[in-house]
Amino acid sequence: MKQIIVHQEKCTACRECEVACSFAHEGVFVPALSRIRVNDFYEEQFYLPMTCVHCADAPCATVCPTVAIEKEADGQILVHEQRCIGCKMCLLACPFGVMGFHPEVGVAQNCDLCRNVAEGPQCVQFCVPQALEYAEVETAAAAKQKIYAATIQQSLLSQH
Amino acid sequence: MPAPYVLIGNSAAALAAVDGIRRFDRRGRIVLLNREKGPAYSRVALPYFVAGERRLEDLLIRQGPDYQRLGVELMDEATVTAIDAAAKQLRLADGRQVAFGKLLVATGSSCVIPPIRGLETVPRHYLWTLADAQGMKAAAEKARSAVVIGGGFIGMLAAEALRKLDVRLTIVEMAPQLLPQLLDGEGGRLFAQAVAAAGVTLRLGSTVAAVARQGEQIEVSLKGGESIAADMIAVAAGVQPNLSCVAGGACATGKGILVDEHLQTDKADIFAAGDVAEAGDFLSEARAIHAIWPTAVEQGRVAGANMAGKSIAYGGSLGMNVVELFNVTLAELGRFRETAADDVHLLGGSAGGLYRKVVVDGAGYLVGAMYVGDENGVAEMGVIHGMIKRRARWRELADFKLPRFTYATTIHGRGRTVPARAR
Image (cartoon, rainbow over all chains, first blue to last red; front, side, top):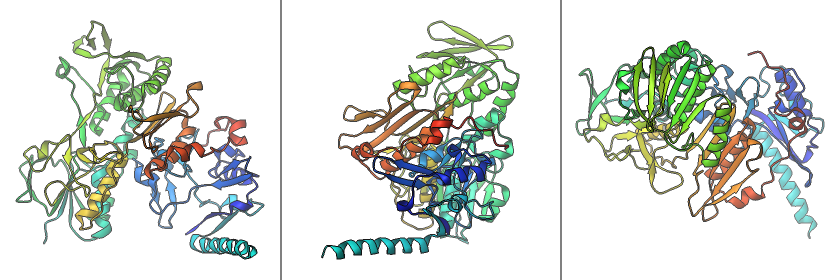
């Protein structure tokens, strides 16, 4: 399936992704409502955007007592807001801490890959440094592996 | 035709077992014996139904066509009275007999009826089945005051639902704190402050001796002499596994039905899962009953797969719960009440009503956590949950630098300045 791939080394923590996500889903520019969150470690100058990874065997879906979280045929983990009672069991189950909660509506929310936006995920569209990419997971993983292998190769060769 | 898979139950464990069976056996006949009537509903959603926040149809977690799609025959109002393990035969209350090839006992649990004098003589409300919830809702819409007997998980959910309907509340709890299964003493103290601030009268460390009709009202008498009159009473004294169908000795029992790591009882073709099963515990060698939805689903899936001929071991259940009550979010994981051998680490202390605690065992492994605060801290508890499940040490969490608040959370607080989205 196509997913949001994070190239951590390119992230500058500009937070355009958060603003774009909030606007796409809520119609307001409020990063706190974003379903993607840039985690910042300023001292180390390390920034890591994180959002739902749409697990194959998703703990959030397993624990949901109202079957409000289901894996769609395309692999997406989708929260059905009408069935969600806001119990937060999914937040307690997500080992990545990426399940969100809408403070006003009182329901769980995760990245829906902008399924209702024709142009696709808005965080990716507005990511200037191109730290986010919307791509097939398998292809992206292989490409990433190649890049890291090349980096390791370079550093090993330079030692000789 | 081979004898079918028979599942006693129609909730989390039994429905997950259907999924577990169907992963490996697409055609085998499955019969679901439902003690109640109609398609499955979520017990967890009942308080929201009482409060008028959810409609009846929103509670359903399976519809008729779902059973058809999965090839499941649902038998309504089928209460199993006896299991003949040798003859692989069940007897129902109405005399019908059902033969099984593989059997899953997923009968769940039901409310404990506390020993209170006069309890049978007055109208009283539990919050466990859909019928209970309908009765409580009808009574609450007319009542102006209520006494909730029991300040545990269900009692507090009932209290929250009644409060939303503007019913004036008194909560009587035997333990010296509210929610003893969810909070330690300090957490209980913080939570009790929030409950009392909402105008609820609390009687902690108190036991109800008797109840009696007093005109249109019910008089609740506490041991020690005090008595409280109210328009209705809600009773929530805990739950116990439904073991009556195996009372004849169909399989070995302890507190619940004893099962091995494959969720099989001491009889080859009989399995148990959910609130009724005493199964492997993630944190100890002993067996435990964690009467929570996630455990029921996990066990149901494993039991179903094993009934279909697989050999999958269950990794053991870990207690977990989260709930928002009286505008406070509470969450617990694993062994959140420390023993003498454990270390306790407070993250953030209890300033501002926020209380975060992690329990570490003598060997340095994370074994439990507890949280009192707003909804923003639950996702972090999820990360700790993942760490407990992969047997992480405290060191890893101590070194883990939690990301600073983003400017968004700083500027907008909890995002409450945002206009509400139309539902």
